[in-house]
Image (tube, rainbow, N blue to C red; front, side):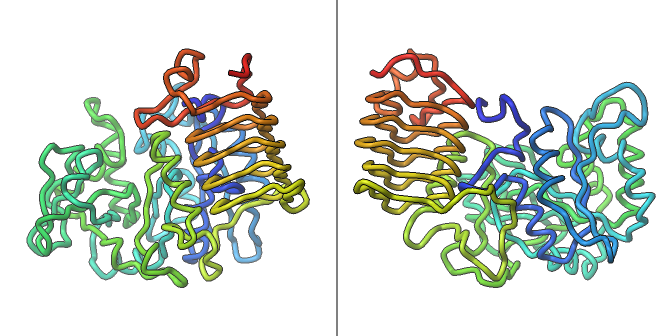
Length: 390
């Protein structure tokens, strides 16, 4: 919040022209997995619209990407968790009868060749394979952590935000953090979902219920994300993964995009991130407008203003004398003459009045009712009115 006040998190814009869901769908499609169902529930209109209008593939070979709303097939209830969402949508699996089912989260920023993970799953003869990313132990307590047996592959325990994460067999200073990506052998998945559905004490979550169940049965293994080799990656952005579950991480992930040698390189043409683009002209700098280390999307105009280390989404306007730095400006937002925007996230269709100050004084921003994160990032929701120019 407030970016999710009017949309599901996977529909949140990212990187100027993308939605968060475009990253996982691009990874799957690039990796040859092209029969995809997007399970949706709350505030899903913009997500459904984006998927329907953007993700159209040839049906000649049976490929599809389709949003699937909550259908209440098993009674008048919404999804109780991610496992229950799949359980209530088992007709999708029965219809296609796949040997393997890939279950991925839709709100992370990364590149991954999913086919390599599927091959590792088949070679390991496991019931489920969980993607794990290596992380320093002192940074892992905020995530779900995977503890392995001494072989470094089979999973001993799945720990939720442990205070003292276990080290890896080959590096005691690192631990595996779950990426929320799973490959299942279909029969194993179906059996686990049915058992979970009958368990009244379950939270019906993939990471919290299904994976621990299969771990206890000795059927779970980890896939080391560091082994994944994506064409076109550099040493700097190899194995990059961001869980943008907070406003601070969302802002930090954008700052990763804009350096000369970006921490995450959107310009890798060998593994493109696909999306749809609005019908707008190219970005324009006029009246001496300047931009440094920034992404300027189509239709954006910098008129006699300065932009630094920022991401401008389509149709944004930065007017004369304005200064924008370390900011994420979403579609259609206008920054007025002489205004200053620093370390901020402005959602769509906001008008910053002439001379206004956003992100300059976090305490003043809080007093005006704006959202300010723990690290001091000021955030304004979609269409937020700014009533003063101080």
